[in-house]
View (tube, one colour):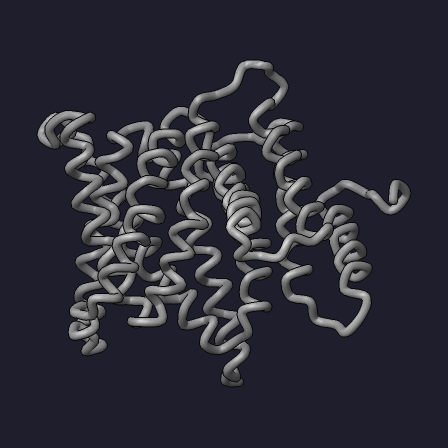
Length: 324
């Protein structure tokens, strides 16, 4: 049997991470309709902290928890990646479809560009602006969905992704002081406890949800252990073996596509025309932005990106070769 080389192992890890994480919006959309949303988020997150603690012990990384800089930046990560997004996204998912949850989570890319450009952390270029406009048009198509009435759940999910760029800013600095598993543990422990406390304040005592928790406990176990823990470990192990410029397109391109397939299979939701159009535009916009960021050639990067984007749109059923 042929053994995989380093790059092939990295690609396999990223693909497995993409498949695993693409279940996230499906589990959230389903679980938040039968369990209190913030409580489900808190229990999933605190579950992840338990397995992450075992991971730290196994890797002998417990001393890294004592670094002051690590704790300082991890607090920012906890607030902007766990607490605030979870409140908005999980609550929003309880009020909209699994397909909308899947696709609208991609608006993080748009907010990253807008916020990082405003803070001058990312250079503004016409190509990046074009990619962001395409993502915005796709988001508008999904929110509209043939009706002038706007769904509050959709807006909450979009608002939740607004916090991720700030969290990633803190995460980048935290990772300069400690390994990924340390950051993941701190944010999971503090974020999980905070979310459970918020749930007690606004969603009532946990005892009120005891029958549902006893019946559906595998949902937050799966979400906590496999998605919040192992999928992240797979990502970091994957990018150790392949270039980040290769890993990002694999993940951003595959994740929403797999999620959409899972929504159709597990949630029995059939996308509307507007959802298909929005999905296609958002994927194209993300692909365009990531291709520009890779910048693989000395010349012709813009032309290559435009051609690759047109090919992607054609594969998704929208032929633009005669338009542009």
